[in-house]
Image (cartoon, rainbow, N blue to C red; front, side):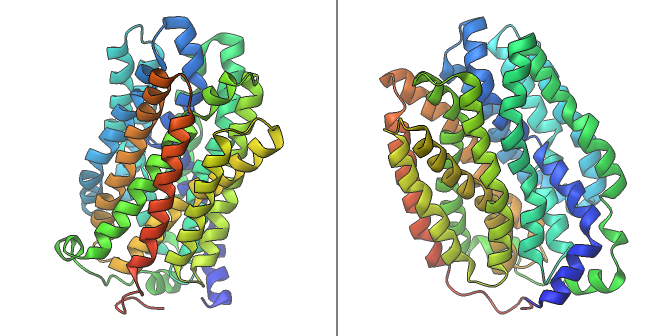
Length: 405
């Protein structure tokens, strides 16, 4: 990467990055996912639903996000990112407000499903397409900075929810979460999601619309290797993080302290996003990905039996690094191996694997807890998923030569 040109791109596109960071952090994929963990025990205590039943809501959220991703990719190419993002932000809030009023699992699930469907245009497919098309020399760094919005939500949301739940109950806590996209994301996206306003020179350099077609990508082994690795990685990440707060509370840790440990995940997600983004602009990305995925495999095995707060904190920090890097790596690797010509559609298909993992793992891990009484089997399974995902990454091979370097 040409450092001067890269810093110039970042400097001139800072407002676009802020809009994308807030948008992806308060998206239909991130907001429900990071809310469900700290809400699980209060809902269980109030309504008597099992943890597996509560966590199943993420299947309706992220699962529908997986199904809608290809349609979202088409809509972005057809109508442009801004016209897709703005109404979708309102859709996220509407669905969560419905879930907050639920007295039955049917209505609870329906709220998460509505948030996913009407809010589909807020998911990373859109924000990564905007950033990948607007930045070239600093693409990895720009993706890391933009996608760091999910890290900020992971850092701040658990404590926010626990505080509101303690004061007003889980329903008002979820209503407070539902208002965040309207209060924060809507005005910033309206004002700053304007990639056409970047300097003409930056835009011309960034938008190199070369690459393979969707059909060609689906016939490439690299697409399936990348999608498989991302699916396994997100099965591990999503299952572990969504159940982290209740797992720690089960060990006798106070809810607010457990939320603080979960916040440590969000804290290290930020360097996981940003640092990895800067590194992959300079170093072969699959090697970086392999290291990033092997570390949390070890952390999960340690976390399974850890009782020392310092050790738990270190393991949570490592999980945060992996969670921070995975989404950034998917966006970066899709651009590098398949190009930008059909990026939104190809990324949307790969992202469907990520969303599938995010959707199914929380329920799977909670189900294992309900059957065994502990989360030991869940942490062991997560370690295996991380390890396999890591070993798949080097199979991607060298970068194709159709993209500018």
